Image: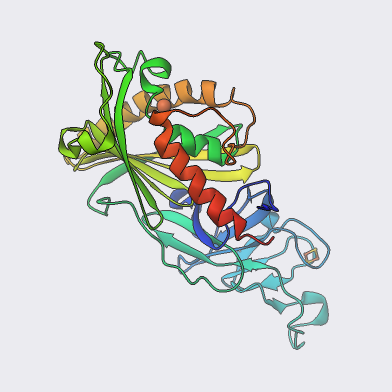
Length: 331
Ligand code: FES
Ligand SMILES: [Fe+2]
């Protein structure tokens, strides 16, 4: 088994890269994603585009540029690039010049969906559709927050699939009640989604139930992870906590947390509720951050030399999928 990469980015996948509100009309934004500088811009028609931030002319950062005629203009010598990265104008050659197609920036395919900006990380044209999280649609109201963790994105994802840490890391918040015993968990991998039913209990000396002894309907909740980088906690049909784990580079991850709810629809009150819930989420997330940043190594051990136990089944499944799919990476 040879995994040539050590950053663990799955290739040929749609990754959430930005939250839509971060990029306004006619705005240019240079960010680090997958260890690379990538520039995003939104044109006057609201279309989002992305390209390698290094200008192919003489390496200026295109993030300092502007949107001009729905193209991206380099701040240095004014080359104008379209959404495909093609240079449409090289000012020093004059407006009448026919530009050799070899003058181009490396562009990326992007899509906007559910107010997230997705980027196709791979080669060639995207051949997959975006898979979305069960049940979340435009009828929810939401609030977004982001945090930066100094870990590889795999560690952050595994933390959200970890069902036995709650009574320890979150003993003052969502893990109150000391439910240290993990029944199951029931875990299913279907296509590119992992579903986990959480059925933890207070330990009174009973044996944990095996997955096939568990009634899913009696579980306290369901977690769902969609490869490569987003997740939700299904608290109820009308309340979800959603997260995207966006790799800046090998050792740094932006976590976008979204609270989605649709049971409170009274103007102002819904906003207040969302902010209160988000305040609580921030506390919970910081409890996680503390301990996940302490893990060593900072990249998940997908070769499984950690001494895992039964309750780590969701993590084992995540690692198996990563292992199998990274093997096919050839870059
Ligand atoms: S460096 Fe971009 S146009 Fe010269
Ligand atoms: Fe947690």
